[in-house]
Length: 92
Image 1: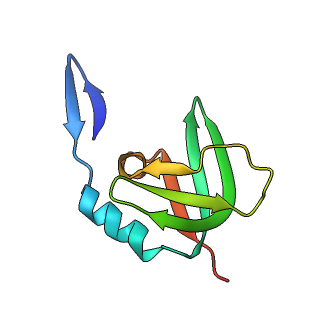
Image 2: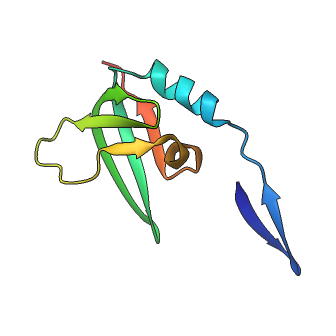
């Protein structure tokens, strides 16, 4: 959910997806090549290509194609739901 400031009140905007829908979306991309975009905050973004290597009940993992990549490679479904992690399938 997002918070929106309206006058003296905060209004909550509901997300259009549920965790189960996010899990199905990620499961569909399992073992495929993906482009991962990470929102690190303060207008900082990291993008890398990799293979969605594991889908687990609480998280999913991405193996980067660049072996020198030193960033985080496992993500929770809530990070995807909140927009901190975005996945795009790469045509092989």
